[in-house]
Image (cartoon, rainbow, N blue to C red; front, side, top):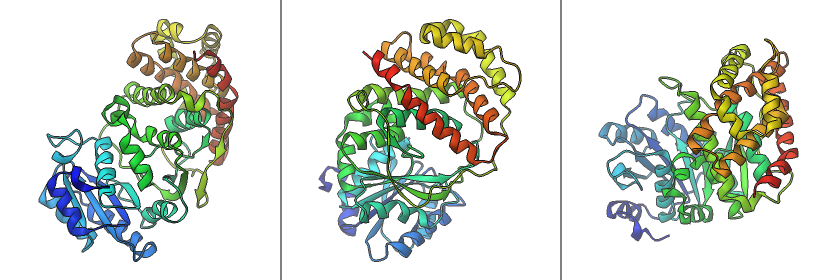
Length: 413
């Protein structure tokens, strides 16, 4: 790709470096004590497994400072760095850089450098192991994969929103068995990057708030081969304060439903699912992690029923709503929302979203209490078993979403 469409200083940096095989995108938000070690770990991994291949780091800094640049240089050593200030990012003339805009910049810059593999990594993950970058890049360089997602070691109840909603719905709709179908860290080929960059999603709400979900589906739409690489434990730093549940659920659900509308041609006639190439042995969940109180979740579910029943009456089919009301009468220790009911609830919400029965932002956020009832059922069903019981429960849920898919497809239009 020609670098002529890049800002002059970026094009000059690429001209000095020359073509590279691997471009590593790293987004920072200012200096961090862990940053030199993260960058050094990335370098060590690439040098040990991809020795001899020209590599460059594309450093997108949300809050440019000499200290951050020095920390990156400390870890990266004498390998080339392409420094991208916030002012050169797609939607960030004032320096405020969203993750999706940083991805666009890394893909565009990586293609201008003629990289065969482009990696997007998270600088905030202090536990990044040296093997991660090469594990993601090797299937692109050596095995013909166009997009490679990470498979992480999880605790029993980590990521319940992903496990209960994202994975089963994405699998049922688009027919691929992905362990973690979110491209927040990934590697892609030059052809895949070109396809992604040519799409108009970058200026849309979906691109700004759901790009990590859009990328795998866009890969399928462009016949890009998808793989997944086992990379180990992912130590995500705890947020300063927990995000409110309603907006969190609403953002994820809104992105998923927007994908269903945008790519209906990919899924309406599809039935079942198939595995994707997996590099490494996918791990089972571990026993650690935060404890979850299902009784407290059920309290939230029942409170939502009291507050949101008029809204749910407009969204849920009468039979589905009747089952929800029946489950709300269960006592402590009884599962609130089982697998098949949960699949019907999600599909009813998607159909109501499609029909615009109310403001979409209100609709998607109103799923949050029902999600609490679903997680309560998951915990009650699995807490007496080994951690692998959660994996088995997730597989069962995915199959039920697939079985119930005709209910959605028959009512879509």
